[in-house]
Length: 454
Image 1 (cartoon, helix red, strand yellow):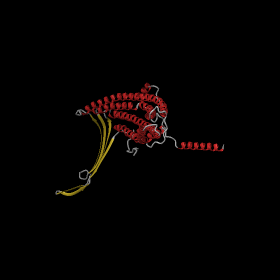
Image 2 (cartoon, one colour; image 1 turned 60 degrees about the horizontal axis):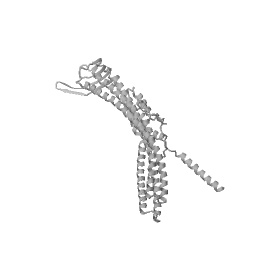
Image 3 (cartoon, one colour; image 1 turned 60 degrees about the vertical axis):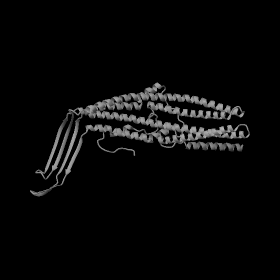
Image 4 (tube, helix red, strand yellow; image 1 turned 90 degrees about the vertical axis):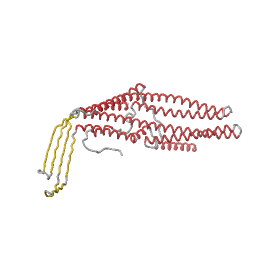
């Protein structure tokens, strides 16, 4: 009794130690990997910096309402010497300041501001598209590592089985039950399996390198994720994508900006009015009155009569560009519909492959067991056993790959729709607010400071 009690005590202590160790080193989830990519991926951070630069288009356009002020000053030292008079020396000084306040610019400021605002909105949608792409890359990298680790394990397991098979073949050859050919077949299969292990390890190393590139750190223990929640039908997915897909919305905003740009260029054909003011001070001892002061204020009206055809050509060019942008919106919609359809069918195919692969694994394992039994009684050859073992490994690898493809295809559907953003996935991270910088710089009159990432 005491011996049995001690044995059970050791088992319980070992189980507790394993549970404690497992609690200390938890597996990284897919959500955690996406959080890391969202927070640190340099491509995504660069796109955010690009958007902050695009935000500056609006204050640049709004500057058309504001005055420009310039000042100019000069100071000189003048020497003169002539035969008709004494040598002289003086230091003339002059200061001038000018101000120009636009009053009317042919609606260029109004339309230019609207075009800039549309470009900012297009940039925000492009940022969301890049965000989705980075998160999808993280998902692919995560699932690739899981898949390739499983494949390496299956390949190594196969090597172990074939190694035992070769040992058994050697023993049977020594007692004359099989021929040297059977041993050579076992050895060849083992060598091929070892090559497959090396290839699988190389593929895994590439997947790990890609994971580090996208996520930002090496993969530890990874936890198999759940399937993403999706629309019930393909039609619902298509309808949602047509409304919220960032590629479609970005193209639409770019088209809107190009339409306003036509009006901006047309403004060069309209009159322009401004209010100009200037003041100057001169002190030149070489003239009779050494000091002079003047001030001037005037309204200026400029009416273009003929611009050598340049503006008319620019208007025509802008109209063609706007037509191009409208066609690009149509193409963006078609591309999104294609992407949703492809990813939806990829998911359906992966599910079918999983069902078939599970049946194949079960059947291949049952067949292998039967072939082994028949081999022992001499009704099957060594090659039959090796082929059956290869079938089992191939079926298991197909199942692992299909399970990976199912997860990736599900998230690809979300990305095609436009719901693969950090907010839509409810990632536990501080979301980047593209409006914050825009609202901060929109009405700035002064300052060169910028919040940059070095």
